[in-house]
Length: 317
Image 1 (cartoon, helix red, strand yellow):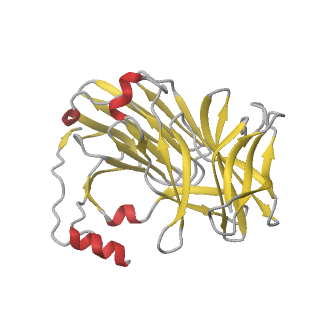
Image 2 (cartoon, one colour):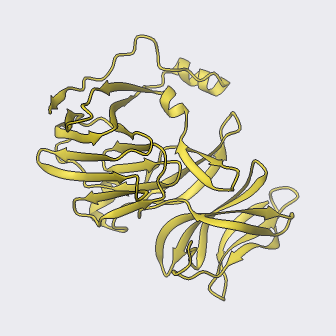
């Protein structure tokens, strides 16, 4: 079975189904699913469904689509429902990604059978020739899970921890703490259902101002040179991964991916935070040939014994 993107003449987005006995000759087998949608819908799905992904997850069938409308790219939406071998009937829709960055999500299973996804993180604004030096980034690999109510959730793949080294940084929960992280990627965790405020700065210039409001269930992002964004539906702990000009935010209720202004002097990058916030600088281990063979054979190595933490110094508080 192959699933192709489509838009129908009535303005609905659609996914088309093809079948083949030999993976060479393909026959159209009807419209897998379609939906007329307007921007006032709770979950808008546009007029064309790009990059459709269709798979079984536990006892459910899932369709992921990237929303296209009037030559603009928007977000990824997902439907959970039933499949009779010919037609997929959604029971529910939800928005999978927030922000104007994540698109063209693709799905696969890892070697342990976990359902995983990753996305193209496009530039903001799109088609800006000045941003081509950082074009076509990819997201972290995420595990896609579903709860008993049929809600889909993205979380960083657990092997992200196995191939990274962290420098835990102390912080004062009562007063603002400031850390010099330099050019290293940063992994920030705001405690479960906790308020927090995080600033990412270069010298005195604020590149990211993140406020977590658990009572309202939102995280608010202010970014230099970009529109302010609100990530709704947050719950539990909030995890923020910053790598160069890319910010990915995970919670058990929602996922967002965003671009921020590139640093002119990455070594001067600092993080200032208040609240129940943990900041860790990240160094990704180089995979040598022995580790690569272990990965291929299914024996994933953990952090290598004796690996040294990166040199991250506290700038002051």
